[in-house]
Image 1 (tube, helix red, strand yellow):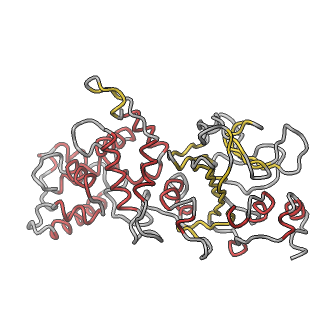
Image 2 (tube, rainbow, N blue to C red):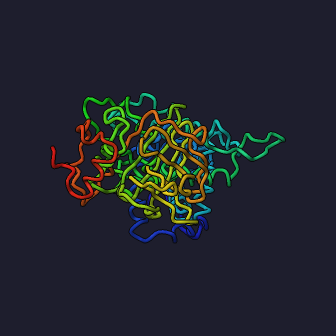
Image 3 (cartoon, one colour):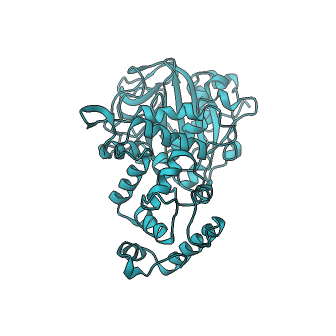
Amino acid sequence: MGNSQSPASNPRFAAASRAFTHQELEELNSLFTSLAAQSQSNSKYISPSVFQAYFGIRGPLANRLFELVNQKRSDGMIIYEDLVISKAVYEKGTPDEIDEFIYELCDVNGDGHLERCDLEAVLDSISDAVFNPKNTQTALGSSKTSMKAFVSSAEFSREVDGKAGSFMSFVDFRNWCNHKPSARKYLGNLLKPPDAATPGFQVPHLLHPENLSPESLTLQKEFAWHIAGALSQSEAVQWKLVYHSAINGFSFSTFMGSVSVGGPTVLVIKDTEGHIYGGYASQPWERHSDFYGDMKSFLFQLYPQASIFRASGQNNNLQWCAANFSSDSIPNGIGFGGRANHFGLFLSANFDRGHSFACTTFNSPCLSKTNQIQPDVIECWAIMTKGIDHDKIELSKGTILERFKEDRNMLKMVGLANSSE
């Protein structure tokens, strides 16, 4: 097999080989043979340039991955045994072993300490690989600027040589990965050929009216990629804009009419402070007098920090949608988590104000700068899934009937909403 030794002569190679089936080893050997041939090495080793070109990574992260795969020999070569040993740890190891490999991978300068500059270099590599014009609808543009939100939420609690707050511990890194599922998926799949369907490389295709430029959208492609990391592969393919406050106005009734086809949605809010956040609603927005939904729902921050906050399981106060209730204990509007009048995220039925508090439902902090929210932009995106007639979902300004507070929503509930259209 390529430039292989016998397993007996290399105990690490022997142990690593046992992690794979015979067919998997044959496929690894075929891959090595192909890449070694391209490296013009008489089929003895893979060169750095061929390695990086095949796996689609560049820059410091690519150099660091090559260094780890070739066991830090500094000879500029990856032999067959290196590939088997690295993939055994990186792809077949225990969760701790895999996370430790990725933690070491992110130390791109190789000094044994994961610093802010290392993380920034990693995110630059992700930005270059995932958000290039070939993979998305728009050019690279502000991708790297948007990715800074991923660094802003990182914690650096490890003290080295008396310097506190400058280095990321393994626990810090694991917590960061838990709140950045797309980044974790990307970093965990670098030894697979890059593809739009490879976990960590998926960027949802965002459908919106032609007269609405991508730059005017609050949900930029980097943010969509971030949210999609917490969803299934089928839910990360295509999203459609069904409500935008700049077009539809701040109208709860229009919002309810726009999302009435059903299915999961992504609610995005940009407030007047410039903070961007929202929630993934796994269930349709329907009128209830209490919390409903399932554990798939989650909250998120996008800017100036980026994090995902999944359901903790501590309570079932997941999704809220109330209209035309006169009781103070049933606030009219939509929300997620917490409790009535003290939600993790809430928009009033007038869509002119809201609030966000730390909540145990998602173990989330206050998502906004202050607890009180004044929305500047509200967007809602429908997840394009099978079984939903998405052709019926249209983004329009709505009729006069839709502007009469709750009337349209109430008429829809009794099947009369479209009688005047």
